[in-house]
Length: 124
Image 1 (tube, rainbow, N blue to C red):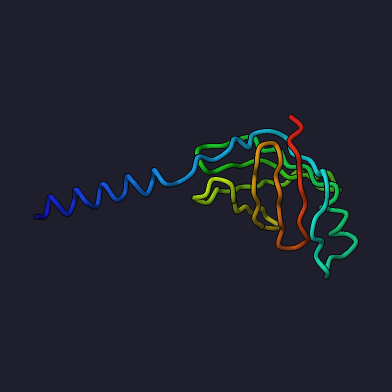
Image 2 (image 1 turned 180 degrees about the vertical axis):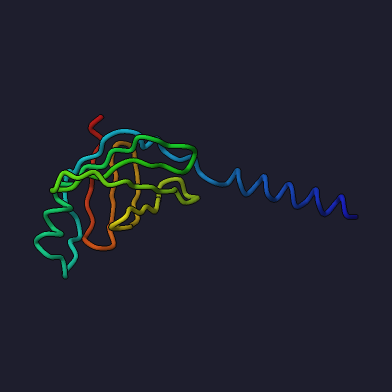
């Protein structure tokens, strides 16, 4: 009976992993193409920071990624993130901010917790 339960548990684990969608390749440089849904309490500085945002994803392993974010001050900041099970939605954080996003092809939408949302396109 014990081996039967272990076999069922193993099959369930394998099927759960099979349900998870394949994540897209995010490696490359992403730049703002358009703004969407600006935050109502957004300051001019926050608005400028999001408008000039460039994200470079340099490493990706399975569902995790890392790279740098460069804003208007041109100072690179480390970013790390991980995809959710749907294979499109991800969460990310850096020393100064965090947020969620989605990737579809060469387009990425991000929504930062300290500013609004933006759409970026892959340039490289």
